[in-house]
Length: 207
Image (tube, rainbow, N blue to C red; front, top):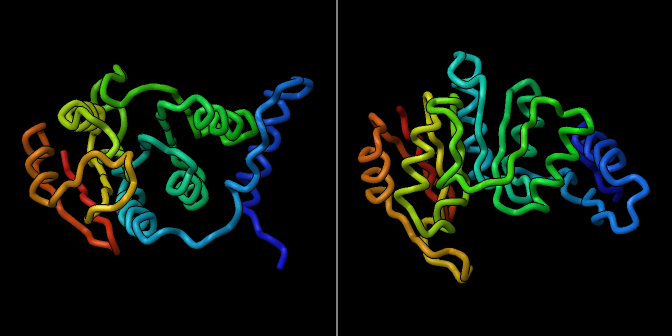
């Protein structure tokens, strides 16, 4: 069976890649496979469902996605909400490079940055919604990431984390619902609610 792709994103990526790397003797490998059509992960479906409620209500016109990685959440987000202003921040240069190709290829509402969410000094309440899917369990300074995420958000912060131990050596924290609730209330959120999907917990914190 022929593999299908998320065509608008793939086409934009290829255009941006050609603009950025044409004629370069040591250009990075093109990552077309990142844009293959596949079923959204359960946690991604849950967060997209939340956004489908707040975007039409005018509560999310700008979104910051932290640690966008391989695009497991970001690419379905861009697919489903092609007009949403999306900023992403990641600490890995090759991830940011791929996202910059998307921007340069025509996804002009996507704004990639390389940086650390714990110390990023963007203005207060710059984004209506901040998403951090599968991010917090990797970051040593839990207070710093929560403090800055809350500072940057105007309306909501959406977090997903593993709900049980696993064998990923990069997972250095395991959060309970109470852990997350305490952290986000302590750093200025008014209330939180939780959703559960297999092996993960999702929290929506309201400013």
